[in-house]
Length: 294
Image (cartoon, rainbow, N blue to C red):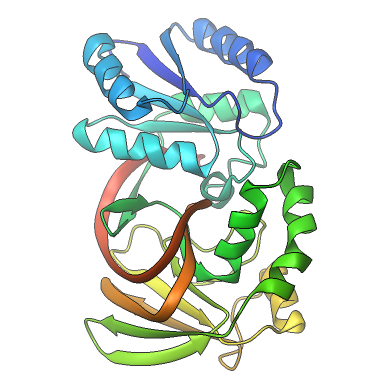
């Protein structure tokens, strides 16, 4: 166990639909019972990364706990590249894809806190995409377009995503064309979505990368070739294999992708913009995350 039981608790106050004041009280109560001190930082969107780095240097915590969604966790993970600190996660965002893959979203809050303070850790890979970290999933195409539309909507949560689905499909100019270069080959593919997966599932539960492993030093490029309702339903049912006529999976340790026209792109649920080219590489076992015991 850590001798210095001081924690940095980072909260995104506007993520998701949870009452953050109640969440903070509950976390403080549980942490106090376990004998930890706590330094609280609430993100504001104003130089958060620099402020968190300064706070870590000042408070010298032995671990960091973050309450937020994928975007907040990504930001904290980028901060932690300068520090050898484990990360505990309390899923509290609109999109909790990483926490979903780590089996945290099915746990009650008290159990999530126990896991965040526990001694069971996973050393997971991270993707570096044009100098930005991707912990979970990124993609070109209709999902990124959906995220763009969702972020401009006033309705949050899964219902907000659902409301944006039909307009996104109607307005999208798919299929898109991609030239994909990996350590093994150069290929050209057309599709509605090109994903880069470090884990197996989107936060919705769609299992797009059935054999993905976040600590094997390899990521998967998944080309979704066409819009097929039956195959989409299969991914939602967590079936073990995707029909190769619908989706093709390409394992890689690095890749360069060029698009014939600018295409919407997202990283960990955050819309980045319309891009024509990206470079992707894997950073093996870069992040130490507290996870449930299996």
